[in-house]
Length: 51
Image (cartoon, rainbow, N blue to C red; front, side):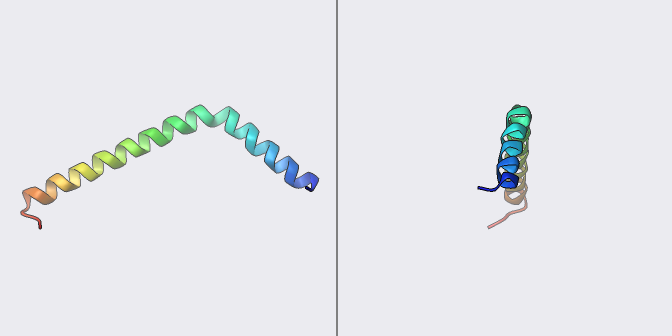
């Protein structure tokens, strides 16, 4: 393992530790928005007499 690779892995681990909770909250919000959009699309499709 080169020192550059070790440095990159340490920086990734540090970033995950620092921003982990915020990133997880953001992913949860994005997933919820995707679900809402999908349900909305399904409802719209049914109202328009979809297949």
